Image 1 (cartoon, one colour):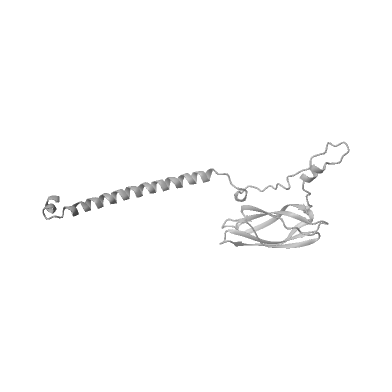
Image 2 (tube, one colour):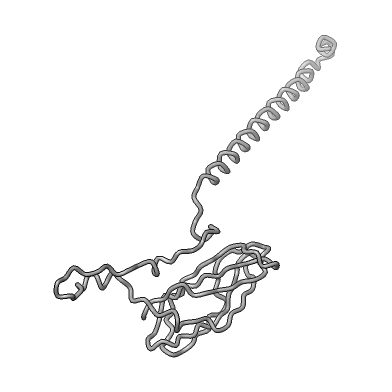
Length: 190
């Protein structure tokens, strides 16, 4: 065919189709290779993500309070007086028996993925409290447990008073969560 086109002076157009076919083949091969590299990157990324440890907010295990876990060590001082350094390290724990949640509701926020809790905290103690830690347990409609979320509230609550916290975000919740029950875990004297 090239010989026939050469006679009439159109040989330069004869190679155009072959060059175009070669360019399309090279483009399709490089596109296929780039898709393979993208797939390999996704697989490696998912593998690394699966090996990372869970954060405190995403685990379904029971939440343990660091504040409640602090205990005072017995003093070896013969006079019986504790040093000022050891007293400064141990936070003064509040009596949780006289601190309670009197009313609570919850709703979804953040396109339905976050839990916003509204509750009233009542302090019947003779001292103000701060750093109140709450844990909210979320359950399905049938009552089966889904997850726990915790939150520390730094605002102080005065002695013999109550304070209402409106729409406090406690974390991400499952879409199947229908019920929430919040309870107090720890608090410190203000």
